[in-house]
Length: 193
Image (cartoon, rainbow, N blue to C red):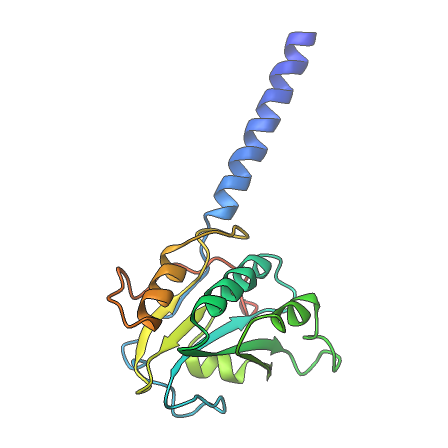
């Protein structure tokens, strides 16, 4: 009987471990459209034309985005002299007036040289074709898109990633190893059935 119990227990532990690994490696959807190589003309989001501009989209209730904000904080601490940061939080118009002001919003106030913006019904996110929380875009001073992707290596995990390294290299006017990376976060918008 103990052997059967141990076998069932080991299988459950193995399944839970596998499920956790699969979840953390599951990247979010990204739109890669050829026509978005420059700052969107139809956005209400402003950029500083003399500096790099980093734009990150957040779902204010996505647990994965805590790691993205921590990584963003590290990036901006190292590069804020070269770059402005816009952190855009989704806010459905059907929700109460403070819905987007979650703990992630409060946490984002610690990111150097950054501004927060509420994005009612995702209008700004749609102008950038952003679909996943943590999706980040870096534009050079001329408004050209030089990086699109995420700043974490997997869901909810902090540490150097292809995206964070690329952003820091580009902001320092170095050649980056990549101009895109996977985004690990919750969907910004519910899928319609």
